[in-house]
Image (cartoon, rainbow, N blue to C red; front, side, top):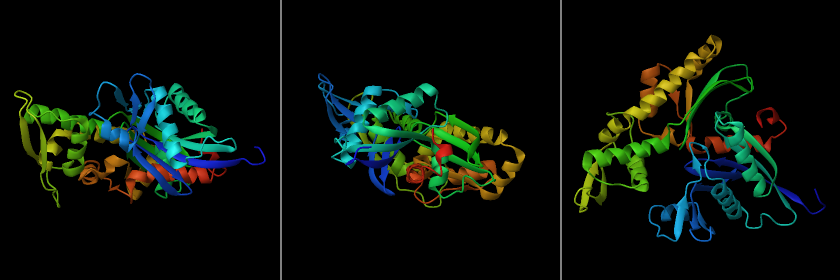
Length: 339
């Protein structure tokens, strides 16, 4: 490092749906993982919330891209531009002559070497001198305050946008893990399909996302049911405008198949767990993190199905980013977890 250089430390939860960046233990950016480009020149026009507002509303000269699918980079160029745009938002002077970045990025536990290489290359291309990666379930465990180095078993179920990560952690390592590509995006797609099939109503990704937020549920009976959400859109047959009130009961039926797959994956991960660790998990409960943890009734449904309490920690949405930030701050201590 040169005489005037300084290292900026960035912890990044590069998610399929949202990207969260933390520096100095503060969330400095929480934006949708979307980038908008000029279709002719490939010039970056917007990232994050601005790009998301354009998503589904563009003309032929603008294209919007979600560079990550199923938790991994699908569009290398767009991902790099998006990360660059986000880092510029956080630090307008990044990429200066005397600055260098130390970045810790979290990745799905089922990532292949090729997928990990893509993340590393993207981070290096935006100025990362030191690039580390940490598995999402491990970051989530650190983020909710679990002592990951203790000789006892803890189970994390992290439901993100593209993947659901299920891992049993003990002695600073992942003992058994399962990464399935059923998560928040699949819930959204289920809602789109349901509205089309049941109500003859065509809804876009953003509207389906809003339905999920307002009336999404994993149970048909809730203690505090949300009010019906009114959806506007064109009738598939006539193209005339329609107004349809949607209830949480309908949505719980339409999400049934995807939620059942998450249940099956948790059971499968428990089957692979050594008996001593299984006993610890029954005592501690299973921790539910990620955006999917906010789905109404999900923890109650899983608890009833699996007979082990499911605990939703405070702010499950930022658990992974918080853990990534702690690992970044204590790189020497958590060096054995970083790749």
